[in-house]
Length: 411
Image 1 (cartoon, rainbow, N blue to C red):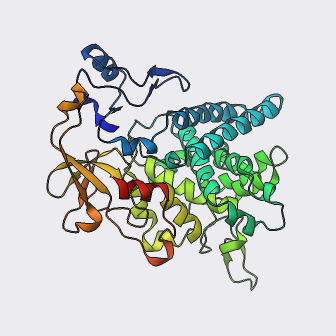
Image 2: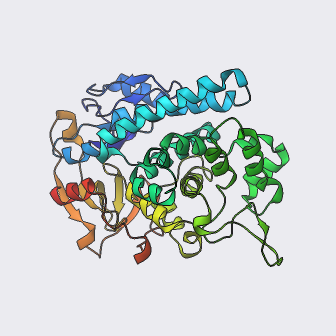
């Protein structure tokens, strides 16, 4: 499958991934296998659909990275988040809401386990609507992905607990979903000031972590409440809330392993999605966000083990997506290597017309890892020429992503 702009979609092309209704999370607008015509293309345009996945003979290796079941699971998670944050103060709905979240997350986790190659955080370019709800759902999903990859690390970090409790993804996902619930207690002026300046040193805004902790204490697992309190504690000790130093000289936040591992995971997921969605009307490309997170000063905020895991599950350039090369050619990403995030293997395609006839378009495969003179300049039309980055030794993924590396070598 290939991800193409709606402006490039032509009658006769076949939908490869179900198109979900923009207003109804569990509703499929168009099923996979539907051959579009002019009328349907106009309908999609009216619904503000920007791009579609289409069947592309000859590019089946990309299909393993895509899962309609996972996407539907993510949309259901958004629905539960919407209800949960709406009912958080209603004690009558509390138990039912927690149970529904646990069931939804468990079902999504089972799907992720069954389709490991598709267990990634693929970039999207849909308009950023219901920003806080989408952010909560994204952070819960991404934290769950990280937790699944770090089962051994969770057991080592929580060795006083048995393995089942140490790796409890429901508690982790719950803390991720509710990490910003304390914002509901801030005044409008504080929220407006945050939207305008994004000043993490604003003491009024910092209070949201304490408010969130107070809201959740006694209602959720204490570990989840504590993770909400500490999701702005940074690995280098620069986060908040702060407490007086032992020598009485100033204050500082928690540091390193003294921060609960769930809070450390939520911190990485939160920072990634915030940088991705809070600064423009459409999500920023993954590569731009990853370049910022792995830069020297910001990188020190994060547990390197967790940051390394983020790089294993978030491709800088998602398979199947369109990129523009420094040669001026249009190409589509075939697969990616986590250790070399900005040097994927791509297919240069000049003409998509054969897809209308169910034929493979002529293409030329180019491995950017062995073609250093060529780089990516645009991702889905967005200039990313200044966002190319390489990884330092301390955060290079050790074993790669397994399935992705195999697919890359076979492509």
